[in-house]
Image (cartoon, rainbow, N blue to C red; front, side, top):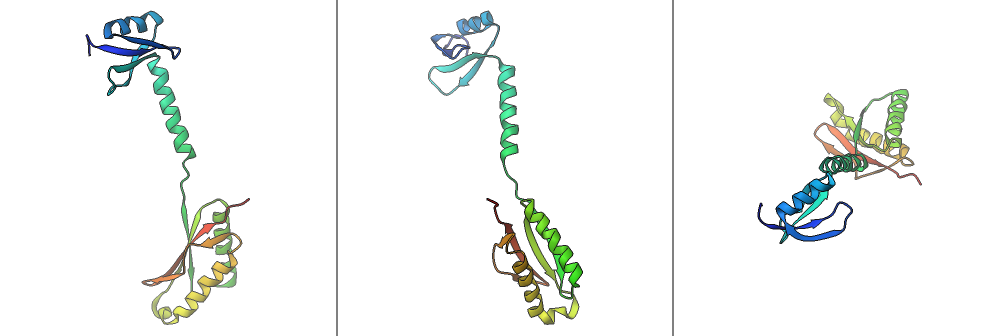
Length: 161
């Protein structure tokens, strides 16, 4: 890069113009800052007189802010059984409501064991009852479907106004 001309932008944002690379380095040293290449593909190459450490700090800061603002959707699972007691059903339902209020998606899974598979209709009734009880907190992403020995449905929280 030595010996070539570069377009220089000053430390306060004004355009200095096209100068030789060595002159640009001298200008940066006079101010006590660094010469940073901004656009390498441009003709001539664009350089800026600035504090390189501050640039790195601000880039890391922006990256942290982007990560913080990016929403991650967590999926929590609540498992039920066909012959579940009323109290256990209510307890698991309250957990699902708690997860939905935090903004998490909830996957409802109903597990069959052994001969319980003969009563799939009871399983679908229970899952539909769960969906009905959670309708003010969540909306189902689809219909409950049988996958092997499990019936599953995913619920998304309703946004509060």
